[in-house]
Image 1 (cartoon, one colour):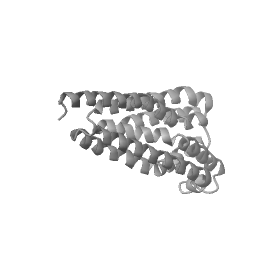
Image 2 (cartoon, helix red, strand yellow):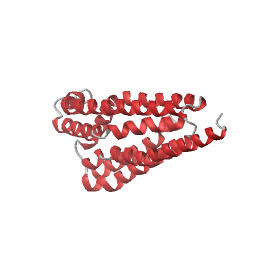
Image 3 (cartoon, rainbow, N blue to C red):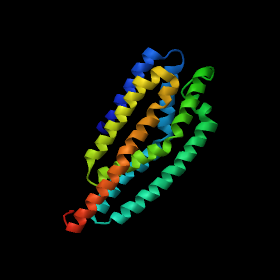
Image 4 (tube, rainbow, N blue to C red):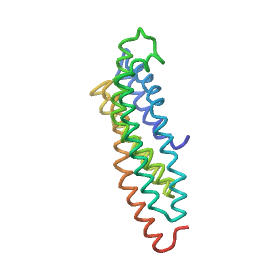
Length: 208
């Protein structure tokens, strides 16, 4: 659970600011949406975690080409799942919200649906975060995975301190997407750096 500490820190920042800058149905909607979003993204999270042992096995076998093939396949699957999750949020967002809320709380349900849509629009960047972070970790560079988490935490903190006071609930909905984009901005170049490093080591015969 330690690897999700940066997510918790960022969420707590936004939650604290919700308590001081938001009122009415907003905090309840945010909490309910997190439950719905967690349900929608479980498949993508599992797919990302599967890349970790795959990356380690193929580095050990000296088959970086297999890593590239697997990465491309996972990205395609992530894109397809992101589109599916977006359609579910658009057409089933309200029914999903009623799993956690009373049907009479119309304002809260509308906020939950809005936040689900805003987050699932950015599920592809989230898929990249999960896929590349676990892959890099499996390839033997766990520090990069940790640093990606730091970028996420910083982005959530910035969203909490800057966007929530300015935009209210819309600022809350942008917290996770901005965090995912920040993490991708670090992880994508990091992956190519890791790959070049391993290619050099393979050429020297120093990869065990």
